[in-house]
Image (tube, rainbow, N blue to C red; front, side, top):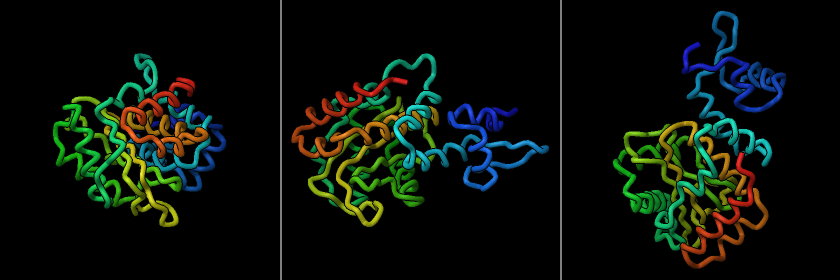
Length: 234
């Protein structure tokens, strides 16, 4: 089997769900797949895009399973602790519109010197937002490129930003957004690992509300990492 495609068995193992449920979702067209020589086959890129959207609806234990399935043996600890640097946290993001938020977040990410091609990354982030907003109902958004751009990065980068007030970012029910986690991953596995970890973090009691009260970037990062450390590393 080509490394670009997964079998039903491989997909079930990656998602950590009951094979019967997975097969029903495939048959209903919820999970993108195609029959080749009578067997279901799933393109990795399509599954990544579907899973990225499905993460919003997963419970904490389901997200933990996804995180574990996308963690390599050599990867120790949380990806948030690894890739969220002190310089990539900005508790006072100077932006009041969606375009300006994306541009300013990328500038924050550039502080690491791991961002090699800012224009390409910004275009990719904007393109992803045009497909569907990455904003949640709770005022948090997780902008990112639809596909990894490894040539544009020295290494994976996570940047956090908070605006002074909520702005229209395409959230459900026209909700406003003021907390942003920019995810720039070098590969699909790291991308999904970070998104599932962030999804778990956002479900922790008082995580979001406390993050809004912290005035300084250092305190915001300490809060993020403290709450992240309380999650089990899968």
